[in-house]
Structures are given as structure tokens and as C-alpha cells.
Length: 243
Ligand SMILES: [Zn+2]
Image (cartoon, rainbow, N blue to C red; front, side, top):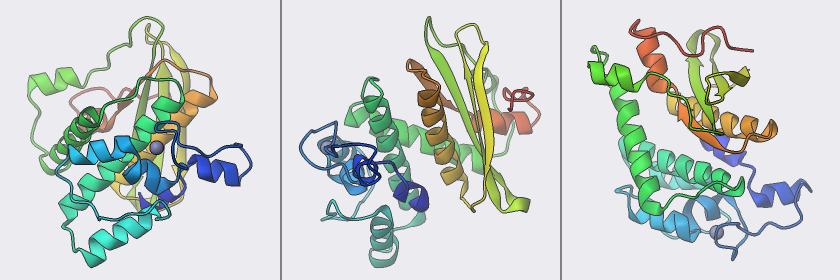
């Protein structure tokens, strides 16, 4: 995730690449949009962190990289692993919200994002720690549901390919009839953790939807679905649809 977040196409990075003229944050319209600004110092980020139980380093300046922040937490403050996971998840949720806002979507409140991050992390932890059979309710919840009306559903999945020391991400975009609008899958030749691969999958899904001009989207992670599919309890929703 650290590497991933350093590659974030913040407006400062886009301006540096001469893609954009201005680098002012679209959310607060006050400061330059650096990584630390989006994830820590912007008003919406502060509001979100205040709604979480995550302990974050104090005095993060807008020039800090995500690696600086992690280094402070892990090395200096000796923050335990579970809390680091929470911080990484909240950071990823903030980045997703920033992307949704920039593509004209409805931005979430700090409280909503804190809730989203906590729910995601709880589901992830359950999926990786408790391989027992799911309840019927859980199986039902993992079935694909079509998006409403003119919306599209973007299902993403990140998987670790341990034997290849790499990760794979796949994205499939379907309309409200369940028709496949577009799909992609690709391998990333980098060693990622499970959560990082999942985060990369979400990022890939958002960028892919933007590339093909789909704006009204519901983004959904398939980690639970994939987990159930691998357990032989439901059909994998992505099978046969990889491009
Ligand atoms: Zn801002």
C-alpha cells in the first residue's frame, strides 16, 4: 500500500507531469493536493480520522509521503499491526472518496467513511481468519445484485499469486441487465499484501470505469465473493469473463 499510495495521481503529481494546470484540492479548494493533504490534512480527512479509533501520527505536514507516515507509526510510535491496518484502510477509503468526488459522484461524510473502513476491515478479517462455513444469510449477501436503472456495477478483485510472487487484479463492469460492458484482468509484478492487492483492484476499477467513460457506478469488492467461491459455496462471478 505504501508504494501504491506514493504512486497516487494527486493533482500535485499530475501538475508535475504537466497533465493538469492547477494542483488545488477539489474538496477544500484551499491547499495543494498532495498525498498527505488528501489523506491527513484536508478537512474531510480530519473529520474522517476523528470518527475512527485509529491513532495517527500528529503534525503530519503536506510534504510527507505515505511512507513517512507509516515509518513514524511503525518505527517511532511502535503502533500495533491491527492499528496500522486500520490506518491503511481509512487512507484507502479517503482516496476512493476523492476519486468519486472528482468524477462527479456524491462524496461521503467523515462518519460514513469511518464506518465503511471499519466494516471493510471487519469483513476482511473475518474472511481471512475464520474459514468456517458461512450462514445462509452470508451466502445470499455474496450473490451479485444488478445496479439500478442507468447505473453500472464495477466489481473488482485483487488476488495474491503466491507462487509467482505477484498479484492479480480483475475488474468487470456490468449494466443493470447484468450485461458485461467491459472487463480486464492484469498481473502486477510486485509483491503485495492481500489488503494492498484489494486496494489496487479498487483503484484499477475506478480508473478503468473512468477510461471507458462510465460515470454512474457502484464499486464493489469481490473479496468475500471470491472467498466463498473458492470454498465451493457459490459460483465465481468472474469466471469466463476475464479479458
Ligand atoms: Zn483539501
